[in-house]
Length: 128
Image (cartoon, rainbow, N blue to C red; front, side, top):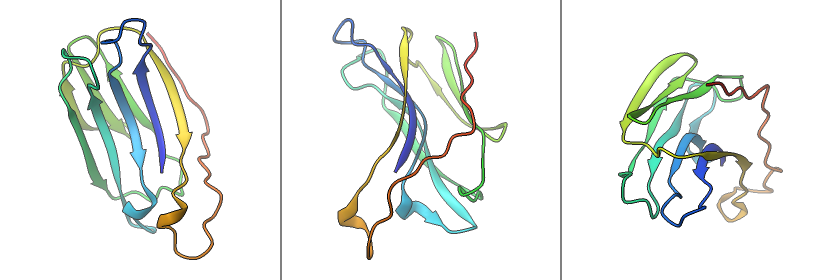
């Protein structure tokens, strides 16, 4: 699984919600044709944020570079892939978040010898 997300700093216990920009599991890929791209909100312990996460099947080959993005305001988070609006979520967290990027390995779910996880990123851009 590869993921790019922003999560609260937990400077107060309730400031811990997450905006998941993208999350993709290897078992959700149809090679060369499509993949399920997860995006949305996870409240964790923040009562002001509602769970609003979905994996949307998109006709993309994730071995190619793509642009995954979120336009985030206090009112909503709009999620984009390659410049196309895929979904919107109301009531995202309204406090500072830190950016996280990771590749996860699930060797028990692999067939044969699992490859070393790799998440190649061309660039990350943030702006106000």
